[in-house]
Length: 134
Image 1 (cartoon, rainbow, N blue to C red):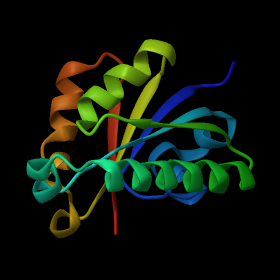
Image 2 (cartoon, rainbow, N blue to C red):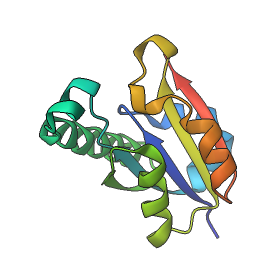
Image 3 (cartoon, rainbow, N blue to C red):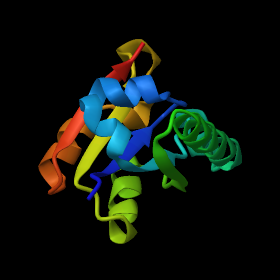
């Protein structure tokens, strides 16, 4: 039975990035890629989320395509702008054994990414791991 992995991504990742977080478990995993529609503070204040939703769709589609090409069973979804809500929603239909959160390096993070890893570790039952993308 394969491990079910929920991968929260803010930008497209490759199978190598997933393997960095999971080791060899990545090759036999069933992965649900969730890209939250991260919105800038300015767009948030202007209530203009369309660009964020479009970007999240592109990120999850590109990630799923990359993982599939590398032999990793993956599906994707676009999530709420709040990463924790995106995880919570995904767990309703995808009973993950593990959650992996991929974030950008500190200077490149979206304001919604700040503190998400610690909050997820406190809030969700599946183990949560974190990989910073350079």
